[in-house]
Length: 181
Image (cartoon, rainbow, N blue to C red; front, side, top):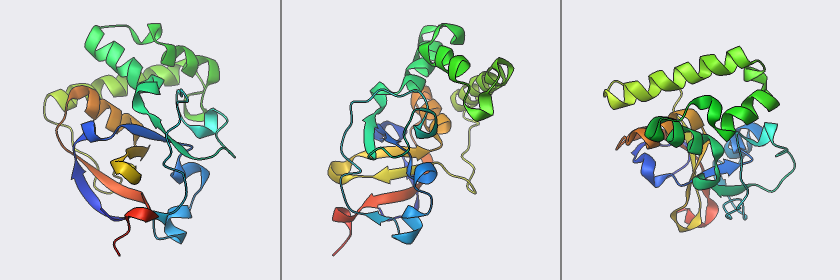
């Protein structure tokens, strides 16, 4: 896989979230380096996160891959869709209401987003869900085959929880050690 490539991928293969996200915290980094990035940005961090770097003090932090099992949004999706838990009973919902990320700075905005997620999940189950080819989710490929979502966390996580077998993603950043010789 090479940076910029649009591919079909099993969402189950995506096991991490990039924190902080390349596309938000380091805009243009992938473009300026043609997407081949050296360093330890693909190291695993056991940090737990709710949303993303901009809202959780990620600016200035070393970039790492956080296991999706430590991502409260994915946990909330599973609790809601697999176990019937009301959104308001999840730690992620409480965090959203308390922190108020810019797009969701009021409870009614959070509720509208939750309705969107409910519909997205229903569409996935009904086979109607299609990724927008003009705005595919972004994933990063690290050493040892680690794949992290970078942008499109709602779409990727809902696809995972719904059990979709294939989704369209765009490869954003690939570790330089994987560059063909």
